[in-house]
Image (tube, rainbow, N blue to C red; front, side, top):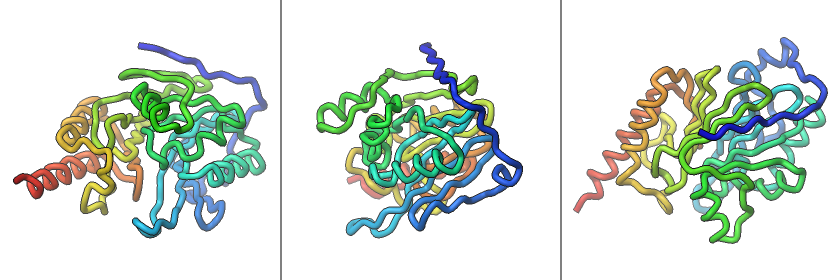
Length: 251
């Protein structure tokens, strides 16, 4: 198992009690931060689409010692910059690394901006190969099935359990907080279908989720790629949606 210590020397950053207890921080009408626990936030960005209407995208921010790791970007460099500017100006926090959940725009739409400010980026080798094939910005560090790192002594685990929403989707696990970022591999409780299937591998999807369930039986919070945060029942919900889809689409 590979291990990477991401360490930087900057001034210490501490949340005040007021900031730590605030559930929602509104940056603007299209960007919010939701405080989960400790220094872990969900960043939510809204997009207006002709095809899908207005919808939200979830990502993660892990903040410690004046630095942040971002999991998935908003769908544009502009929104990614707005989040980084807020963190830098208001909290004196700099984004130092990105974890890309898969190659879609709702994961790497802001990668080009993050690269321009010197942030490192991590993704599966499957994602990197696809980005190269499609002429997209390419994450700088790749891994095959698993990768662990220490971000300012905070452990973060990245895993590829198999295909689902896309052939390259990974999960991010925070073992100390028992938070699982499932991204688009996991559907929110309100979801009644599997959504965008343009690169989905439906035949593998439920088995992949079962592997996630087995790996993290102690999970207390699950964050899907879109929609409300939930608990472990989001995994079971996703499995049921996959099985329903296959039943309805079996000739």
